[in-house]
Image 1 (cartoon, rainbow, N blue to C red):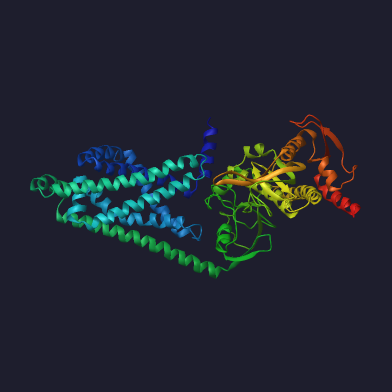
Image 2: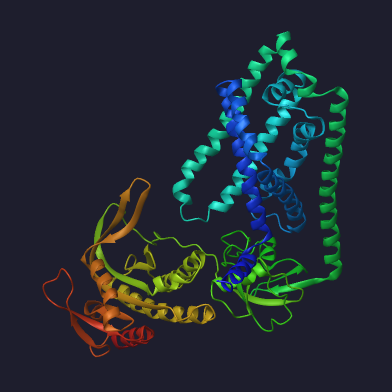
Length: 578
């Protein structure tokens, strides 16, 4: 146990980054905001309800240990926000991220007068400003401050909600929880602002009564004019000091940019012929975004995933050592190769050549080049089913993002071979895919296209295995089933969930042949129907009769141990036919 605890502490420290510290502090502050908003919402009931609620609110948040944690979190969050302003070199991620930063940096300047007036006034002079006194100030004595406070509440709420969204959006349950979170995000501030309005209106009416003023605007509760002036001077000084820190951060950015320009530029080569020149100190991911180059990054450069991984080409000894956070993420995905780095964390000081392990790409699951009719038609098509082997084991020791990207790279390699040989990717089911051939070709050509596509798939998977050799414990394997016959094609589905697909026995048989490759230990199984229609010689592939579920008679198929050979067999058959 004694040896386990330090190891766990060490791993926790490695896993912790400044962003995560800022997140934890933000959650503490957002909890306070939620508690405060709920207290405001009690104004829809009565002022008395607000005063009862604030007793429990202050009882918790002013409890000494909680107060220490709260103020530490507030100061840390503010400091890290200023540091983020200095550190961020690239503001073209998405509109929502710079918006969150700007809103967060504006909160201290807006809230300082309220905090000094209430908390410091209580500490220095023993003031007891509660809802009656604050609402009197906003609705009677100084109505202009009401708009300032309303702006502060809205900004604080939006800033917190954006932070919660960035935190939870990668969680598995976020999709299910999103409607409820959205409802809370709308209802809580709405009820809080309505509560303030209702409470303020009641106070404005009661303030006309001299007796109410006598009991609620005493020196003990609101202080003297001299005390108010002192508190205003303190809040003004703190505001100027905070704005000075922001100016200092911006000035430091300018100095850094000037030093970087004087320090020279470096060349980043992407391994695909594309080279860009950027100042030293820019991360590889920031360089990609600055030059509008696609670069995978599910978490937005927060080092919370590893989809921005790159592999360095050539000598990597001159590169900066990985930070604790980067080393932790790379260890999580089982990468010990020093040439593998996170693009969002690597800031090279010299020219660098690399290639991305996970290239972003987009594929259409329903693309088809030619569809004479989409309402239903019977025609001869060749169905090719391909499935990735071992994806469950692949996911066991990897981050979810890595598993998804590897599967996508597999499906991308398969789809590329299908499209290059005249077929159309039609359905993606997990780590498998159905491709159709013959939508714009005769049966013989469709069979030949499907066989050549299978050969192309094998070649593309070989390249993919070589590319990911440093990340995969064992090569990606696959199984292919090919069969042709009359099927029904058309648009199938309901309302907004309609897809173009094929239905029929030939499609089902192709799927079952693909599944049989596991037990028959081969890469592909081709029905004899496809072999014969394509014009391949009878002795070109070994034959076997197999039982197909749903069929009374065994079916003759051809076993393909190495799918790469199919392209040469098709070319040979075409020459013989000619």
